[in-house]
Amino acid sequence: MSKSKVVLEQVAEHKVRELLGQVDTASFPDRWGPEVVVHAYDPKTGVRGVLVVDNTARGPGKGGMRIAPDANARQVFGLARTMTWKCALADLPFGGAKAGIRADPFKSDRIALVKSFARSIAPYVPSRWISAPDMNVGEKEIEAFVNEVGDLRAATGKPEHLGGIPHETGTTGFGVEVAIEAMLERVQGQVPIPKSLHDVRIAIQGFGNVGSELARFLCAKGARVVAICDYWSGIYDENGLDFAKVSKFAYAKSEAQSVGSCKDAKKIHCNDIFEVDCDIFVPAAVGNAITMETVHRLKAKAIVEAANNPTAPDAERILHRKGVLVLPDLLVNAGGVIGSYAEYKSKTADEAFALIDSKIRENTKIVLDRSLDTGTIPRIVAMDIAMERVAEAMS
Ligand code: NAD
Image 1 (tube, rainbow, N blue to C red):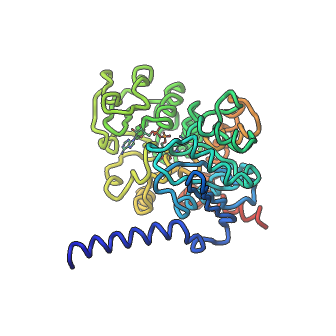
Image 2 (cartoon, rainbow, N blue to C red):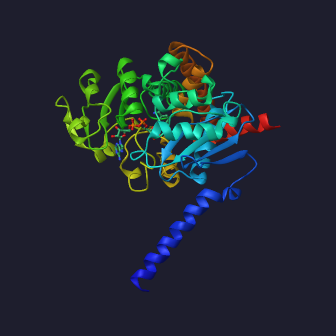
Image 3 (cartoon, protein in one colour):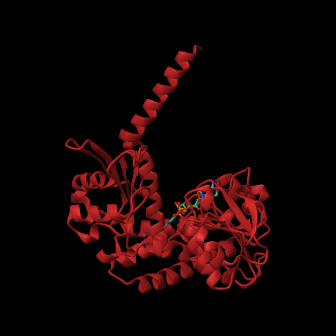
């Protein structure tokens, strides 16, 4: 086949995929949803976006709004569905939804994009959808969104002066810490990890919002965080890292600011994080971190999923066979959305943290009780519970 034909076919395939992503929403409904798919187009500004409200049986659909050049209905639907299960498992009176504005965030006026999108989807907010920050959407864009809709209930993740409880306060990382504590309490002896938080050795992949806040909460409780890495490099200390010394390397945006620049611990390659001798490994960076390539390098006896989708299904089956406990993202990283619910109910930040603590503690216990009693993978148990709750609300 000629080179030009190959290129043409690739272009055609790309076009078909793009079109499918945008218009073929009829191919994905099932018994759970989606209930509404809105393709927004503002002819004045040329702004395009999509809102997917997946399921509102338990309450208005909750989910963030992202600005991304590849945002399409299929992708947004997948994210909305995840929110349906996450909110149900957290036992919040919310359904699942998500929105994507299709634009290059670095070449556009984000505030103008959000305002235009807000006008298009205003009839669905906040009865069917309550927005929140997501990729390339922060509290400034959320402020513009609620102002344009004219209703503070239209979104969470607002700035503090509008009653917001920003994720930057560490709600998600705090929830992960609670999940670790609850797991240790419940598994006592059934998984070969030390019983006390003071004795376990923890390695964290990712030192941004979730990873660094988690490290902060763990160290404050006297846990031993032995390794941390970010995109560029990592550090290791078998006696436990001193958070006060490493905290200034959190949220690095370049190699020069990376955690490996910390002189108070041994520098490691970022990929060496998988081989660190530890009891608990926390992926808190990207999806698909634990794959068939990396799974065999892990020494931990428990994986606590702080990132979304960090473990590939094949790798999870291997871990289960080896007796490694995998606490699923659906359960572990719900601190952010529980904090959002607290904001929606006009609660204070302290009340939000108390709610995250009680919900994640209780849900971790429920999931592990069923999982350890039946030998079922915790993710399957978590999904079953979420589905039972949504099905009950639908009936
Ligand atoms: P972030 O951008 O603040 O931090 C990500 C960190 O991961 C950074 O330290 C970055 O350097 C590091 N990283 C990126 N690629 C890496 C790689 N290949 N190897 C090692 N480290 C790498 O992001 P965040 O908000 O902390 O989110 C982390 C994960 O948690 C994401 O999967 C996100 O979807 C999920 N999550 C976040 C929240 C929240 O409230 N922020 C809530 C739920 C789930």
